[in-house]
Image (cartoon, rainbow, N blue to C red; front, side, top):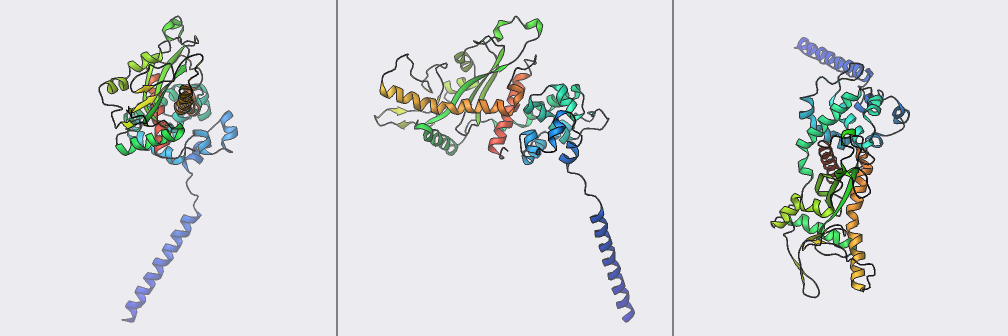
Length: 350
């Protein structure tokens, strides 16, 4: 009996010694590098001079948590098509590598060559990665750009708009911005793309809520078109006309007037039952009209701020784009806005 106990005791001691040795061995082994640590070491050029003193968030304009979420959205689509993508040293590019390259291209506005030089990738590969990322986000990101679907969500939006300067029952602010670009020489005389300031541009129309979240967009139209034409060509205009938008509850004003749901826009838009524009005139003297205009401009400023912030964060559309593909550019804009909406509603933007 004693010998059996001795054998069991020696066996237990040996197991403990083995576990201790294994733990010591694992502790002494170098820990694998974090993806960002490893990736940042490969950065060259001007970006490398500052990247080691900068955070991940300052380079890519989003948090690591948001980055990981975006990777999860595009993983299936990107990895199924990108097994042959490599850097100039012949190393295969991981999913994280590819998403980082695409985000840098979109949020820095740097040229394909500059982004490629920074990450050790040729410009053709940068272009392929960026476009595959755009296509993958198109497939996975639709649910971030939505009109309010519940009564509770709509009530919260109205409450926040009214808190700005007292306009009740307001559901959105609409505005337009122009994405500047140069055209290929063969199309340089195509005046349809020239806006009022004689710049070549593409129009982006957006309806925004008080949290600067994009709720509806229209893009792709030439810069020469007026605001009202772009609006009337939109799906939002069609749905509203059919009673499928801005069809919620009316409220009674102090004079007994029933006010339906509406959005606000500047004088470039037409005055409609569901679209309030400011009073016009060189010498408005009516106190109530002047008071309304002040409240109106303060409320619609959320759309201007949202569009300005969009260009600030995604600088590929901030300056003058060099001969972009006019068929692909609207899709890039759509993906950028979807990512913006994702940043606002899901995770904090850093």
